[in-house]
Length: 228
Image (cartoon, rainbow, N blue to C red; front, side):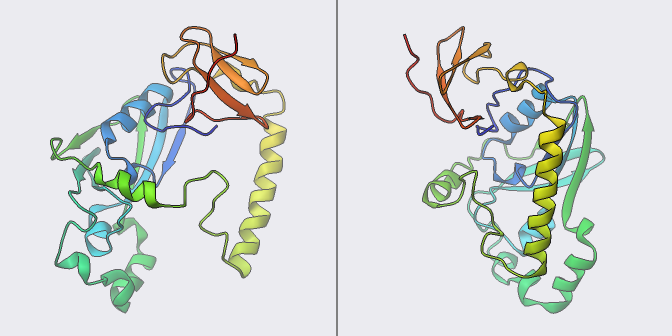
C-alpha cells in the first residue's frame, strides 16, 4: 500500500503491532502521524535518530529533534535544516574518528528506541513553530517512489546479503499472506468509508473517492474520478 502516513488508508486498530523506523523525524506535523499510529495500531515500535545525533550530524531532510525520557517522546521542531549553527557545521560524526567510532559502537546513545502499547506518550516543546520548510526539500527530491532504495547503487557482500534476505522475506510474506484479504483492513483516507474493488480502482462507498489499484498495489496519494 502506498499512501500518506498522516492519513493512513486503514481501519481503526487494523494492526496488532506497527514498526515505524526512521519516519517520525521527517514529519512536519508529528502529532498527526503519531495520532494515526495510535488509531490504526494496538502497539508498536518507533525508532529515530535522537536529538544528540541531529545536533552533531544534522540532515536537511529531518525536520524534528527527538529524545525519549521517562517513557515520553520529547519532540522539538527544527526551524531550518541546521538548527545549531555551531555544532551542526562541524561534521562531528563523520569528520571526527573518535565520535564516529562511538556512534557505531554504541548506537543506542544516538537513537530513540521507543516501544508503545495502546498509547504513545509525546510532548512537542515548540508546537507553534512551523517545520513546513521540509516540504520544499521533499518536492525537489527525486527519492520517494516505492521502488527506490538507498542501497540501489551499493555493491559488495552487504548488498548481496540484503538481496538474498529480501528475496527470502518476500517468499515468506507471499506464503503467509496467501489467503489474506487486503480489503478487509483498508478504509478510505478521506472519510474512513468502506472500499470496493473495481477494475484497476478502489472506490469508496461513502464519499465516492476513487484510488488507482494497479498490479495489486493501492495508491492512496492520488484521487481519481470514480466510474459512473
